Image (cartoon, rainbow, N blue to C red; front, side, top):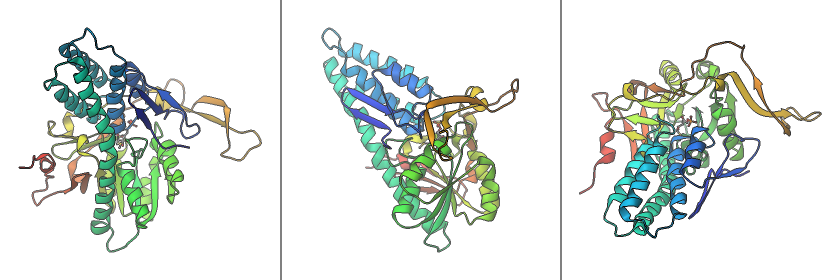
Length: 377
Ligand code: MRU
């Protein structure tokens, strides 16, 4: 099965349907911004960097199918702005989409004589985002692995890590952020073992991260979210590594619900807590995590699970794709509370790993994230 979440060539965009993973690897065609919006909202694609790239490329595909005669550069810019503003409404917490939309708007505002030139500028910039994200993740993997070995491993050359949600190839353009660090540790023969949480209620851990770990033959074990404290008490966990949907100027980090409790448990057990995120996830305009809008998801996600039946007469994990069912797992009538993300305060975070380097707290206890945005010269 393929781990390529996004397949793009100019004029066509296909994305892996993450709602069907890990049992089926099928691709969905995205022809315009409406398809992109729906795929993001329904979580066919998810993960902060992947959301941004799919949104940008969905509009790229739409633009390539537009006739240019009769429409001015000004009209084309107006069209692009309108569609980007629409895409921005899909999911609120991850900042990568807002970051991408802002960059794309700035690029098309620049002088262009024709609508075709405006489109060409947009296409080149959106396509570059796909390329840059993979390279950024490889750098995050390298910097993160180095930092963990130097600053968390206590002289050991093999580490044990715990991760949450999915931050791998499926959540990005490729390689992954937190999972990219785990990959780099593994490729460098420095990974003893990786644990991944199930990540209720949407199970990004058991469905997607576990799938990537098995696919890559990385030594790994699945735990339920409620086992994290016991794991940190009983196993020699070196570091917890998570991704981010938004890191604010002070280092507070919004990520998948459950991240905050992992950070508290890590602090109690003296385990290093590492956030891995490209600088496109850093929102310097928002000062602290209190100002992050947290997406509330439908309560139904907590009440049901969807998946194939176990094959009659087959082994325990043999799937019967003829029978995919939604099963109710909660008592009818119970209320629900389903925030999709939580905010981990900066004091619980030891390192923020970006493609430009690793930020740790200075003597005053603050992260200096603005250094990643200094323009040289
Ligand atoms: O609701 P999701 O699946 O989009 O949430 C994903 C996460 O919280 C990830 O940890 C985060 O986006 C980082 S992905 C590199």
